[in-house]
Amino acid sequence: MQIICCACQKTKSPNGWTKQTAGSGGQISHGYCPQCYKQMLKRIDNFSILNGYRKSA
Image 1 (spheres, rainbow, N blue to C red):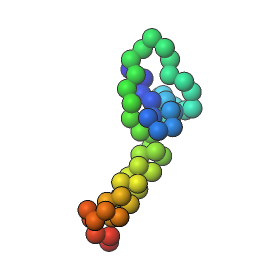
Image 2 (image 1 turned 30 degrees about the vertical axis):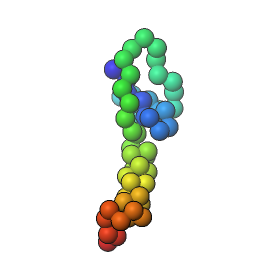
Image 3 (image 1 turned 90 degrees about the vertical axis):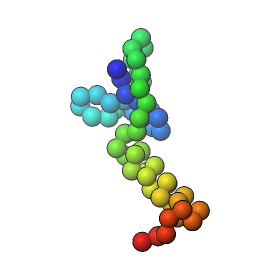
Image 4 (image 1 turned 60 degrees about the vertical axis):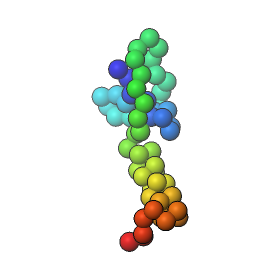
């Protein structure tokens, strides 16, 4: 099964995350690469603070 980042489209390989297209014919699963994951957590945190779901530290 090949994992592809749903934000930047990088694929996970044994050597890390690389910018290449997913191979055809196999199963694909979506997730986040480490960089996009960190960016998404910041966006969620900012959204929560702006909408009053969480008080800022």
